Length: 175
Image (cartoon, rainbow, N blue to C red):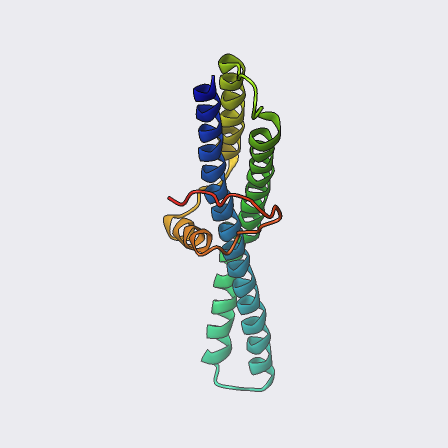
């Protein structure tokens, strides 16, 4: 039965690692959409304020028009693209995946018996349930661009998200 136990542990580790990359991709996407929202909001606010001041200050007539146009375009993009909502969706997906990753780690490190026989059918069902939960989060989550995913992947590989709370913790395998 050791072979079954090892197979279960290996599969849980693979699932945990897969979730880590997807989770961090969503957090990176959330940060990116948040920055876009902030930049567009500042652009709309500043250009509309400057446009108003240039009207009062009696500048060339084309200057307030161009500034007002820039403000209107930035506001329209904020209204239709809604980067703040996308940021919130990615953040929610990242948090859900983080919670699932913790559950899988606890299943692997606490629930999986180290010194007993492992019932293959029970553990197969457990893995299928966990995989289904991940699929549910993935299906409801917004997509993460390849560029953002690769950025998150680099940060993981550089150790940016590594934390050793257990002194003899085994480092997760790298892809």
